[in-house]
Amino acid sequence: MISDHPRFKVVGEAASGQQGLDMAQALRPDMVLIDINMKGMSGLETLRRLKATDLHARYIILTVSNSEEDLIEALRVGADGYLLKDMEPEDLCTNLLKAWSGMTVLQDTLTEVLRSALLSPVSAGSTKEELLTMREREVLECLADGLNNKTIARNLGISDTTVKVHVKNVLRKLNLTSRLEAAVWKHKSRQPN
Image (cartoon, rainbow, N blue to C red; front, side, top):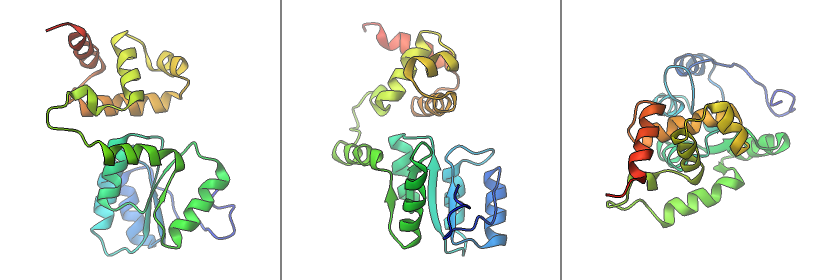
């Protein structure tokens, strides 16, 4: 889709963060699109490492993750934009052109996520579950009910891939290692003290 646009030329595509780093150094592109979830090194770590090089490119996160934490961290690390893969195709190229011209681009649906994060930062006394987005809480409920990814996706009207992203975010934010541990954690949190 991007290569069909007259203003863009796709010069490379990497399957992992390390491959992306190597290709970016070799090909010297003007713009690099990075997914949050990549093989090996995460997209955020890839972005950190790219920013530490002498490559002067525009770095755009293009992902399925609408996680507040991922968005804030990407902007902190130095992303020039944060776009979701489910955006309209014509909007993608429009946003990439804006980014190329020097603007920071943010998908419209994420402005409220960013606003919320800035207006109500997590307080020191907040519970761990308050760190989760509304969607992540719904996914956590489904995990506690023993549902698999396909069933969660069907129940919430999202893709399997998006469910995987939310599960990963839930585990990371709650400092857990497995779906089972998340389910047990949720059941324990439901019990009165």
